[in-house]
Image 1 (cartoon, helix red, strand yellow):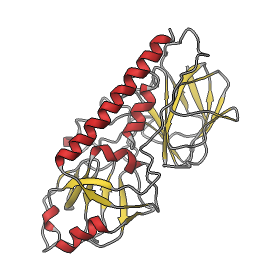
Image 2 (image 1 turned 120 degrees about the horizontal axis):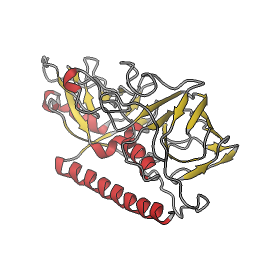
Image 3 (image 1 turned 90 degrees about the vertical axis):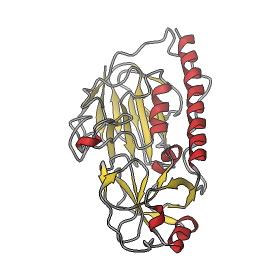
Length: 322
């Protein structure tokens, strides 16, 4: 089974949950920018949550379905249509050979994910499907999809009745439809900064700049200054590290971040807020709010409990369909 790319969209890549375990060798983790949406889109199909998915950014592709299959879409609303008729996201959808899927501009959020039942039949590189565009590794030859690409799919299970509808769909509550703070815990160099800068960091808004990408979100706002000049030995980074370069304007490291960095880190975005942050677009404003490590753990535990409930519901519905 396969899907043909008729139009590639602005930036469509193959991703999973990342290439973990190789940062000591200078290899970036990469993976889905919105890990919540990437997990959900697979769980909806009763796939393993780390199966390969398509990550569509800003404007989605046009795809020709070449064999009957089940798929699911989740994330930003790109007004997905099958043969011109809008289809819902957040639930499994049965499509037939010859159907054409189109995706427009994201109405809210910025990234949408697509999974197929059984997953895509793509070779792993260093135990991951993820595309590292800078290293030209993984996915479809280490690049974004282009017109004419053929995406082979694995043989997924076929329910006895593909006309049976799932009586629910999942909404993405991580799309930030209101101004909510991005929560952080203190970084290793938090105390290097002046009292005024620390106050401004939480009290002043920052704007996501147009040159932001999967490697990092560049922010503009109140300039943050150190109390006295210090040199930092390069140290490890993670998804959500908030670095302060000499300009004083924060950079939040994202999925394609470098394994190490030499700028002081004022904070670390908590893991449960990364999906919401990843769906924010250039020009959008955000503000930061500190939480304790205990609060950060509580939030991620709640997110995991929510995910487990969704897994159980989806497994039960797929079992009913056979």
